[in-house]
Length: 111
Length: 111
Image (tube, rainbow over all chains, first blue to last red; front, side, top):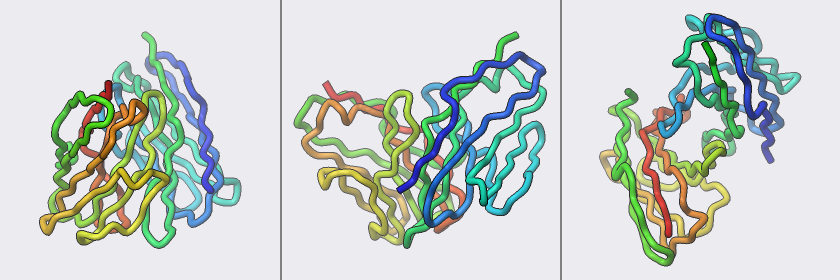
């Protein structure tokens, strides 16, 4: 089966840097995805890692270590609009490709 | 915006009733996946359709069923609604196993 763990809540200050960690145990690993979800809205795609290392995309970066079953999402220069839930999802290939999500980390950015 | 649309936006039903939710995939995408997201949880995989056939299913009972049409749009049907079916239902479209892009969701309330 799959098991994905991420912190329930985090708080940070506008302009700061925050790192959201995700650990996973899975079979049929087919990549690690991060999605952002504002309250009452659909998840929006942020990043995808399939190889070990850091992927940078503007203020957002994502890191993957497959041997450790570990990923993190790094958000720099935090803005109030970054207050949202951040979902870590493992791509799983078991004859078809789908996503297994963690419960999400609610990030609150304060002034 | 992802180009994935869902209808209706909100729906209220009573226990025992049946419901049909609809999803139009992004242009060029041939795969639709459906997820159920309860409050405070990550999305849970229901099933996936590829080229009009169900090619993968999560841990949901048979009263959850679906269809995919030749234009790759899709329906999710739920029979004999239960209170625990109250959730946000998300569809995601993709080009086979590529990144999934989510629609805005349908909020279902079962009374």
